[in-house]
Image (tube, rainbow, N blue to C red; front, side, top):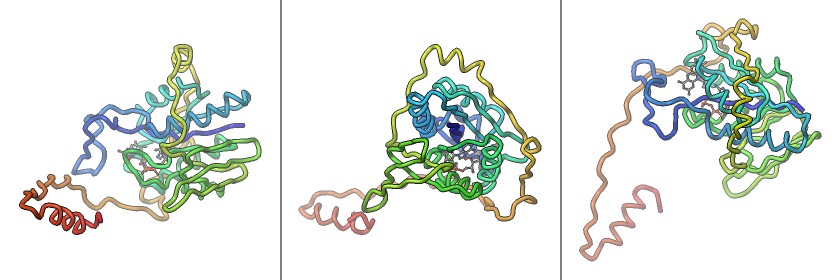
Length: 259
Ligand SMILES: Cc1cc2nc3c(=O)[nH]c(=O)nc-3n(C[C@H](O)[C@H](O)[C@H](O)COP(=O)(O)OP(=O)(O)OC[C@H]3O[C@@H](n4cnc5c(N)ncnc54)[C@H](O)[C@@H]3O)c2cc1C
């Protein structure tokens, strides 16, 4: 089986992340780029299947800036076989529709049986790219699964929703996204770290994929109209216990719709 894992490079969650208020884009110099932790979990799901079914091939796929190769090499050291990066001057600032179109074109070129992804990137947080990729491919999608089970026949998994847990299944080919409750990613061992440096990593442009991007190529697109710094946090009200503190506290929580 061939499994493609969608692996986005993101700014380090532990560093101070900033956006450029003129362009609305990420200030890349402000934080270290790293593989998104949720995508490490998707790689883990693929590698667990490879552990039990050795003729499995795991391919990482990213769309991002040229230095996203660093994150792909880190993920290769977990045990994936190869990686592909799509990078092009027309791609910075891509909305989710364009990202999905580009990733789907790369998936078609790789021709896998299964595409795995994170349920939500820690920076963009759209949470829809996997479903959009599935839509472009015309494949079924299992979104936000805690415990993905892969077999040659198909996928099953449990997705938490408000008020319950849904048991989902689909035949292959399919797209599935995993949640942060899915299996913890493994630590790369020394052998895999050394091997990762030499594993195939293909870099493609939009022309290589035979597609176009940018405003003129978009049938639909979202546009960032302005960017602003978050307003500074205001100090909350201070409750002094004059015998009515419990009532004041309950009123405050009710006013915030927390009760
Ligand atoms: C040169 C360049 C610069 C970019 N700069 C930025 C930037 O500054 N900020 C930003 O948020 N995005 C950037 N992108 C990527 C792209 O615009 C976003 O990935 C896209 O809008 C997805 O939105 P999301 O993160 O909300 O996805 P979500 O729907 O939240 O992502 C869910 C899952 O989809 C998969 N996925 C999503 N995006 C990608 C991707 N690009 N590659 C591989 N897998 C993916 C992952 O598995 C992820 O866990 C850049 C891309 C390029 C080519």
